[in-house]
Amino acid sequence: MQNKVRVRGPVGRPRTRPDAVAGDRAYSSRGNRAHLRRRGIRVVIPERKDQAANRRRKGSGGGRPVSHDADLYKERNTVERLINKLKAWRDIATRYDKTPDSYLAGLHLRASMIWIKDLTRTTH
Image (cartoon, rainbow, N blue to C red; front, side, top):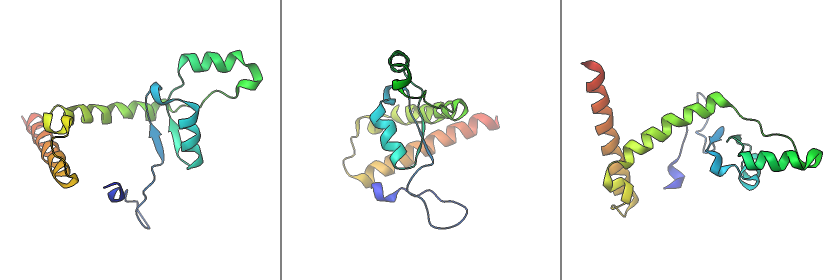
């Protein structure tokens, strides 16, 4: 199923690698950041306070502060809210459907229900 991820661009073949990955502070480890950097993916994860304190405590040997795009990080909230709406449907949250095709069909059905509900809300 992972091979189906394709991001269309204006020209050329579809990409399978994102431009950036946004995550919350729980994913701000040095290992996660290094892995994404090696793959050429921009990291949009704020630094945890304890990590920043440890880095400052080490002085010049602690490295540079992490860069953080606050505007791109705010867009992460939109995605998280959609995921929460999808997971409000128990079949998706608990993964009752065992095959990838039936699970994907459930995602499409739930997304359609959300879209129709939002559509009727904005037209009235």
